[in-house]
Every structure is written in structure tokens, then in C-alpha cells.
Amino acid sequence: MLLAFAPAAWAATGLATGPATGPTTGPASLVLLWVAFGVAFMGGRAMVLLLRERSDGWLRVGA
Image (cartoon, rainbow, N blue to C red; front, side, top):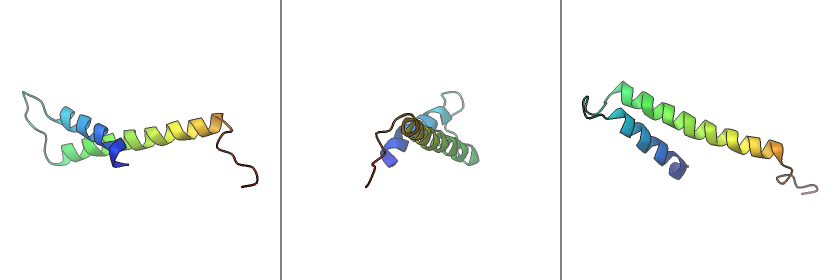
């Protein structure tokens, strides 16, 4: 799970810092990490569920 979320967290912290404004701290950085986690986790879950819905490969009859 951490390997899937790490790039999203890295991107969120990259967006939180800017050369003109400096690093974002406090609640704003927490919100950015929360949004990154939500997008990564829920997006990944949506992709898996869509693949499961569209194929029969995950079904095992009699198992």
C-alpha cells in the first residue's frame, strides 16, 4: 500500500512547495496529503473494481 501511495504523497508535497511561497505547513499540507491519498486509494480501487466487473477471470466456480 505504501509503495502505491508514495508517488502521490511525493507529488502532493511537491505541489505544496513553491519557489515564491516556500513550503506549505500546517493544515494545508495535511489537506494535500489527504487528497493525494484519496485520489490514489480510491482511484486504484475504482480501477480494480472496473476490471473485475468487465472480466470473468476473477470468478472461480466451485472453489
